[in-house]
Length: 292
Ligand SMILES: Cc1cc2nc3c(=O)[nH]c(=O)nc-3n(C[C@H](O)[C@H](O)[C@H](O)COP(=O)(O)OP(=O)(O)OC[C@H]3O[C@@H](n4cnc5c(N)ncnc54)[C@H](O)[C@@H]3O)c2cc1C
Image (cartoon, rainbow, N blue to C red; front, top):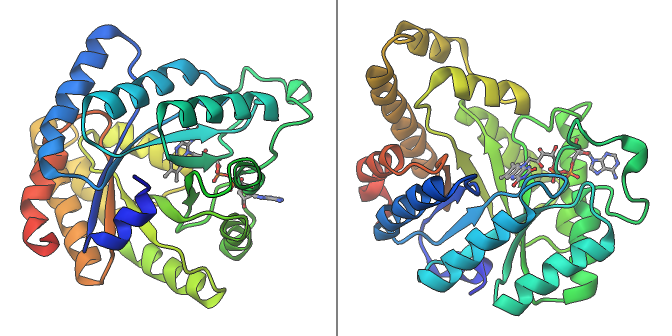
């Protein structure tokens, strides 16, 4: 089923993101996670894609397995960087053949191993071109999601410019969006206001990253330009040598973040699970009264 149709049916959507595991053991562990998370009855789950095609088969295999072996609605991420249109089409043809109807259309980051001059000349230069390519070739077969950035994308000169390009993705036919992680909800609220002002009216689902390993999340956040407020850094630094306490505080922090978002009327929460279920389940237990 198309996610955009499910979003119209549910009061508050809850969804989970996974990445394709590298080994058989890790795949088993991912499917245990999925088994545990499926009791929450998520609106959808999604599987990331390694830019440059590094996880092309793995992403496809995990997406196919979720689609065939569970009753979950699954969305495949697809990053166009490094792919020719021919390659993009063969990936999408394959998804269509196996019955996948939801795609998160991304540009992706050019992997360091790629020489810029070796990028295919007939590819899609940005996510808006990818969305347009999908609509041209598949009309309304796919529900298309795109990424958005409450603090602006790191390559963008400013947030307004980035919102201008976000709007292009919507004009090309994106159905909804999931945001980059953020740790101060004011970034999200101001972003939504700015998007509304320029006429972006698709659902924008906040991406939630529970902090369970502070150094790891700090690194991710700095790579994607997400600010961790000073007071939050201070809290987590206090527990730098205590993984158990970090996790506890991380769950409390994400719970408060989600409660505030829900009280301010968000229609969905997308959890970056890092393929683990425990933190997400505990956060969900804490907020489920606000969702039901
Ligand atoms: C929810 C979510 C999921 C993600 N999943 C993945 C994943 O599975 N795999 C992965 O590799 N990465 C993933 N990413 C990261 C993403 O690929 C990177 O942030 C990437 O750098 C940008 O991708 P995009 O689709 O947002 O690009 P775009 O929307 O194309 O934007 C990229 C940059 O180019 C600018 N821009 C856009 N169009 C133009 C134009 N015409 N002229 C000039 N500048 C322009 C934008 O302002 C922005 O700065 C994800 C991000 C999010 C938020």
